[in-house]
Image (cartoon, rainbow, N blue to C red; front, top):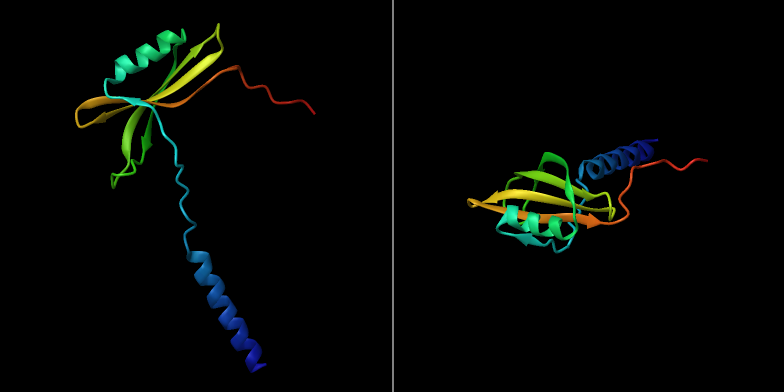
Length: 116
């Protein structure tokens, strides 16, 4: 019985220690196109695809080389004719408005769940 209690106690300690470990952080290794003249960069791309403003919001990002999160603006543009979309971030970086393409694509349409 004494061995059982010791084994149970050791197992509980090991389980508790492993439960407190943080899971590894996932960092995507991707290249994102950016322009240091943010508004012009966004205008050039959205004009080329005939995209119009659709949505705007605020979000936070964690730059790789910075210790803290940074607040950024999010802009979404869509083309109803071409069914394309572009999602940009617009962030102040040392006084410069830097725009980055977070995502872009095609076949943009309203979400409709599949019927069973």
